[in-house]
Image (cartoon, rainbow, N blue to C red; front, side):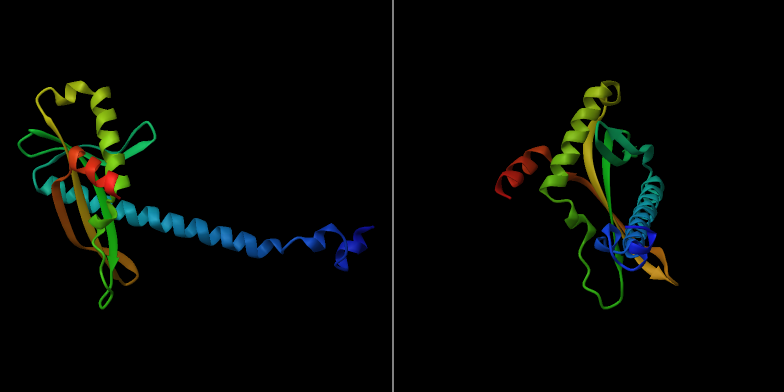
Length: 173
């Protein structure tokens, strides 16, 4: 079959789905992922500003230990605690039911946070010579203002995750 076979819809190329819709779908998926990353960054930036205004000292952001990531590492205002902070953000709209962002920190995420904290502590024992580890959650509510996310509310839950309670909870999930 020559070039004319493909032009008339015959041959192997006719059996393939059109390429253009697949490319457009991939572009939309990439755009959604980029929007989610940008959305998450807005929430993490708001959480870091909130903690700093509360007297916390940011030690690191988006810190990886192995394949696990801590959104924010910080020292408490009295420097007694080295905090591993998980940030959860949600969009809110008038009339929509609101699910608390902190509810997304389920047993699996708590187990992840505990493993990350333990690995970080093993790798950096000097940071815990005179400090206690603490696992916090910060939730950020974002509203749309002219199509742009705008921080509406930030809530900090110190000491939100405990290793002992998480083990029992995870076993019952």
